[in-house]
Amino acid sequence: MHPEEAHESAAGTLKHVAAPIRPHDAAEALKNGPIGALVVSAAAVALLFLGWMAFYFLLFMPRGPIG
Image (cartoon, rainbow, N blue to C red; front, side):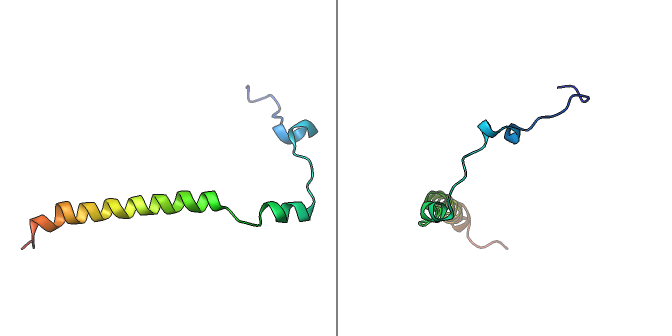
């Protein structure tokens, strides 16, 4: 795209915009919250913690005190 060309947003036409939703339907869809995001973030934190524990017990503890 050349700098002098006008940019057209994908949301500029109605065929690319979602249909309106009633507030009750939106509340029903969001009633249980973002369960998938919580599961993914909990798994990531658990893996990070397990990795840290592995480094601590497998690398740092066998060396003993320094000094």
